[in-house]
Structure formats: C-alpha cells, structure tokens
Amino acid sequence: MMKLRITALALCLSLVLGMALPCALAEDDGAPKLKSTQCALLGDMGSGRILFNIDAYSRREPASLTKIMTLLLAVEAIEAGTASTDDMVTASAACKTGLEHDSSTAYIDRGETMSLRDLLYCAALASANEACNIIAEHVAGSISAFVERMNTRAAELGCSGTHFANTHGMPDDNHYTTARDIFLIACEGMRHQLFAQLVGCRKYTTSATNDSPARVLESSNALITPDSPYSDKYVYSGAVGIKTGYTEKAGYCLVSAVQRDGVNVIAVVLGADGDTANKEFDSFADTVTLLDWCFENYSYRSIVERGYPAAVQPIEKDGRRGEITLVCSQEINALAEKALDAAKLKSEVTLYAETLTDVPAEGTELGAVTFSDPNDGTVYGTVTLVSQGEARFEEPETQTVRPQELSREQKLATVIVCSIAVFLLLVFILLLVRRSRRMRGKRR
Image (cartoon, rainbow, N blue to C red; front, side, top):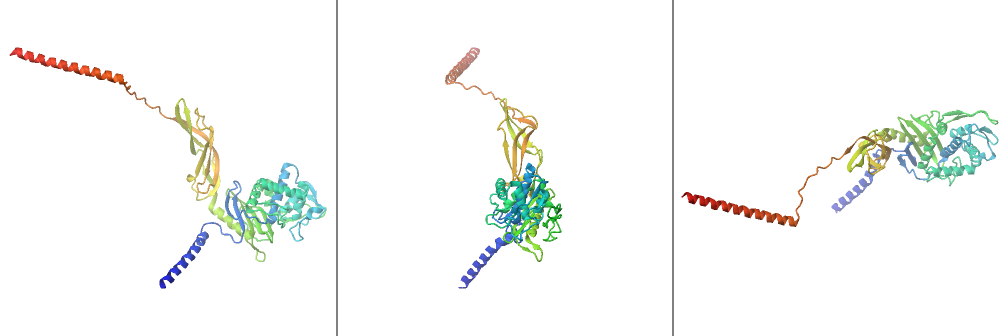
C-alpha cells in the first residue's frame, strides 16, 4: 500500500513538473515579455521582415490607427497631382458622418474653410475624425468613394485581414484589421516624405479660418513628445512617429517608427490596457519593451562583403574545360541578429548560362546569389555575381601509346615464325655439337 502511495505521489510530481517546465523555459526564451497587449508586431521597415509577433494575423478594431491609411491616400493624391496641400477645402454637411459627440475632434464645423495641409495635420496630430471625412470628400468626391479606395489600396499592399468601413476608426462590426496589415500600411506610408512629416510632427499651428482662430495642435504620441497627455516617461531615442489610437472596444493602440544606429523598425501594438488615473499605458510600455529587445539583439550589419567569392562559372572552349571565379558585385547589409554567424548562411546561386563557350571579360555579370538563414529561411539579400581573375583550364592529358593488339591470324603467324626460329636454332646447336665432337676425334 505504501508503494502505491509513493508511486502515485511520484506521478503527480512528474505531471506538475512537466506542466511547469515549459512555462519556466518560455519565461527564459529571450523573447520580449509584454504586459497586456493582445496583438503585437515588430518588423524591419526596409525589408518588411517580421522580427517578433503575437497574434499578428488576428482581426482587431484599429480605432484611430485607421487614419494612417486616410493620410496615405491623401499624400498619394497630392504626389499624383490630383490634390494640393494649398487647396482650400470647405467642410460639408457630411463632415460629422458616423461620429459620436465625444469622439476626437479639431472642432471643424460645416461651412468652415481651411487648407488641405491644415486638415492633414488636424487628422494626424489632433486625430480629428471630422477632418478625415473632409479630406475624403475632397480627394475622392465622397466619403463612400474614399472608403472604397482605402480597401482597394489595402488589397494592393497585401493586407489580407483588413476591411475599412469609415475614414476615422469609429467602432463598426465591418471595420477591422490586423497588426501585420497595419505594419504593411505604415511601412508604405513612411516611404513618403510628407506622410513622415505629418506623423512625426510634435506641434503645429494652423492658419485662422473664416470660422475659427488659429488652432495649436499637439501630438499625443508619448514616444516623441514629453508633453503627451499620456505621460512624459515614454519618450524614446530615435522615435519618429506614427499614431496612437483608442476606443473602449479596441483598447489602447500604437504604431511607432524608430530610426537609430542604422536600424529602421516599426512596432505595432493593439488592444493594450491603460490606467488614465496613474498615467500607466501598456501600449507605450509594451512598445518600449519591444524596441529595447530589438536594439539589444539586432543591429544593421554587413552580411556579405563586396568581392566575396560565391561561385564559379564553368567554361568549355576549344575542347578544354575550365572555370572562372564569380564574386559579389556589392556588399549586402541587413538587419540581423548580433549573434548571427554570417559564414554559416546558405547561399543559393543562379547562373545565367550553365556553361560559357568563351572567357568573359573582367566584371561581366553572370548570375546572382541569395543569402539566407538555413534554420528559419530568413532572406538577408540578393546580389549579382561578376567574373573576377583569370580563367583556369584543365591540363591536357598525356597520350600514352599502347601497342596495337594483334589479330588472330597475326598471332598464329607469329607463333609459327617463332616455332621455326626455335627449331632452326636447335638444329644449329646440334650441328655445332656434332662438329665439335668430330674435331675432338681427329685430334686423338
């Protein structure tokens, strides 16, 4: 009975340890530990490579992060010449469509006229919902047409989990996105200079209008300004924008761009908790955790140097086989783990021709090579290959003269001749012997 109790106790202890050990390992796996964020993503702005994510493909309400797409479409219209920042735009009766009385606003009313530039800053800094509707009508002719453009542009960017129902982000069952899709939109936005200026601005003063004196607009992004209503403790070195967002259903949301030490990353945090009384906001705290983890473990570094010999090009000329060295035409730099051993990367070579029939000139482009991590398949870059140095050919083989093999008739004739020669030799020897005996007889 005692043995059974001990066995049962051992089994229970093993079960507990079995459940606890993975948790202990998870706590020490080196990944960033976030507080309350529901969905998160950290990615390289240039390559689009995702460095870390939590449920980045799960649908969430984006709240005012929606305005990132609204600003992007307006900026693209300005770049295309179909709109101008100097356009004077009058708010229509539709400017408050879909808005609640307590939603974020710059207090723009129907009939007020202001420049498109000022409207963009109202949307970016004050997160003014009515400004988004006014921009939409000016750019696309109507709010509905603009929302249709938002969805079309999202699909073009590869946003497979996004659907927009409005221009500003007020709650709607048909209005959703994912952390990964927000990352794609933000990456595209930061490629446009005007967009980067809008989302990186800390403070802006509009011109006076026919209905209002000048407005002083201030960013609420606590990563770039100590005057943020959220707190002054989240300011982050290298942060350059982008946008905050909040609704009760969406939680606290934040998209952040950071450029430091050659590293350009974007962090997306959705559905975090916040304590307004104590000014504790996990959207900012978790973003700082993600960024700190990134800079502790990653750096922008050289993966492959220019001139690195990566392959050889076969040559066959005048019946001789040879080869010439192919080297990387330029250096590959990428965001990579500091612990990465570049020498262990996998290289995949593509030659434009399997074999050349002549020796190429120095520096001729003959192929390309891609370097990737053999463990997780992460691609760090592709570079063209060019010829370098002299071609090397195999030495011609020394021709060994082999005796010609005799035919059957020739072999038979050879045997007969040899036999006759032996016979004659024997006869000659016998004759010599007999002659020698005769000579000895006469002497006696």
